[in-house]
Image 1 (cartoon, rainbow, N blue to C red):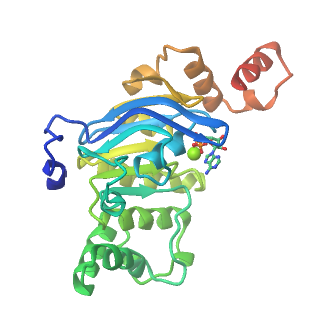
Image 2 (cartoon, rainbow, N blue to C red):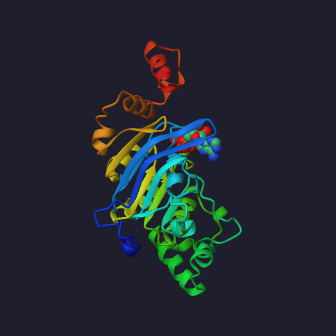
Image 3 (cartoon, rainbow, N blue to C red):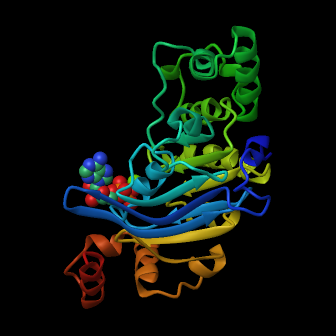
Length: 280
Ligand SMILES: Nc1ncnc2c1ncn2[C@@H]1O[C@H](COP(=O)(O)OP(=O)(O)O)[C@@H](O)[C@H]1O
Ligand SMILES: [Mg+2]
């Protein structure tokens, strides 16, 4: 499902990365949040980014689509340098779909209208074409029957699938997901992950910040573990999740699998030791 736009520039050979991050730094005031990130995502690759809260995962995604301006470094998407000061930011953003933890649907618009509005405003599609693409993408996420519903009548999982369909309706080359299931009740998580799994199988290039380790294990081509604004390790899911090389990764994963350990700081020597390390 790759697109032809990737061939627009000489820089993007078929083997070239779809997303390339080089020496990326980002500070907010004195707070240096990203401290030298180098990362490549190939066309059709699914990269899951994991790491503790505050490690810079959202900031990294937001720098890829220029919702944040990097302090230093370069980002390329489909061979185009998006950090070039002369770049057409709107054109870049059209190539990148983003799905957030909060779905950000317009409450006063129907599901279909939520999908057609950005197509008409940003891509200047006519009404019939926008409606056709909306219907096609609602079907993709299994929500054709909700076309005329309002967001408030949908479950959180359904709203998130609408948000995914809205992003897909713009025809992105790349999809960025920032903890797309973190706001959902546990029983609704599976349907959203199923949609993402289908997208991955269709060959969409995806960067996914998630705490869903079973999804990362099954769907990711690569898992990237971030801590303190750097990539601590990356590799095949079975390696990073199943047999991490670094103590920080092991510690993060053990807390994720057994959160209670982190919540009883001084009960045992073992847990207090672990919690102490987490704060560094
Ligand atoms: N717009 C912002 N202004 C100031 N600080 C920010 C902003 N966005 C993020 N931060 C800070 O950057 C750090 C990393 O945040 P974030 O990228 O959201 O981490 P993560 O997604 O891994 O939890 C945090 O300390 C956060 O407070
Ligand atoms: Mg985040």
